Image (cartoon, rainbow, N blue to C red):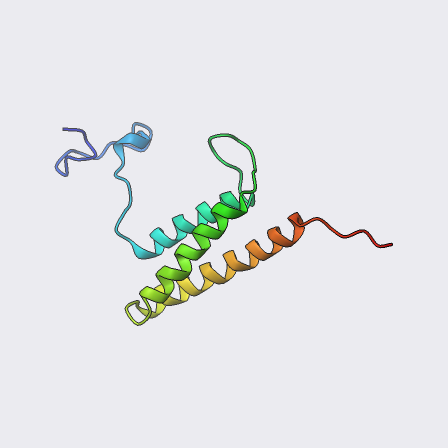
Amino acid sequence: MSPASDPDAPLKSSSQQKAEDLPLPGGDFRLFITRLSYQGMLCLGVMENPVTKTRQVNLDQARMVLDDLIMLQERTSGNLDSDEAAHMHKIVGDLSHLYEQVQSNSQPKNPVD
């Protein structure tokens, strides 16, 4: 049994802990929608992809993530506490705004005659 899965294992000092020793967070709604927003920002090229070390824009994938967040917002309406609802509203609003900015910057401009 690894130390991360053994609740009785003594805590290691911070200099001895490794990332794989720490449990992964999960089950938190705010963290879940924040992770989805990170996916959207990666797709919009706002954040550098930590694997490829590049910024790439994929508007189709960004739209899919945004649509998923909007669907989740609609489906959870009335079931969230006030902090969760406010966080969801902010995430959807911010990502929508970023999407519109990136989309308008990526459309070809018509030359003025």
